[in-house]
Image (cartoon, rainbow, N blue to C red):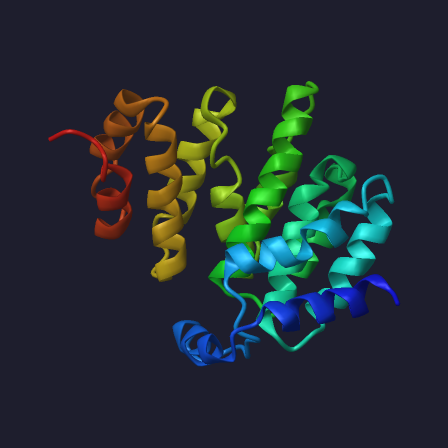
Length: 226
């Protein structure tokens, strides 16, 4: 029995079919579900995914691609769990494969999950002295707005490692867009950095209030004191 067969058995055993319909409705009917909630999914797959320690990035990416091809949405979430768990096996040379995967069956749940993984890879590169942002410059201008969202969000959680100049520049570069998921991403990225540098974010948002959409502006300052 191989990994994917074992994962199917584990997830089906953890599934609650009564949950499948509401989960599908929450995703606007775009995907079918087994009915496995996130905590149960992680618990069911944890031991199997842990066994992939040290297998190498190419094997991980091959497993992720196979999981992505499964019709039920939980398998894409398992792929993201796997890549996040073994993110130290990934490097900047694997970003094209990760971004290509993110474009398949793209919706906010998988895109945001991939943004976190991409961010971890780039933060590790930054901490080694590399220029992680250079890999996001083209992504910020990509025709696919989901990839632009990943670029906007990739510094989430970086705190002191955040390149504020890049963040603010990216926010302004995308500020003209009408796409909800871009406007929300701008606000989310700014709000996250505000946890580390509230004055800097407040000053930026105030200076560029006319350029930022009301949604982006409101989200950026959501947790700031009046």
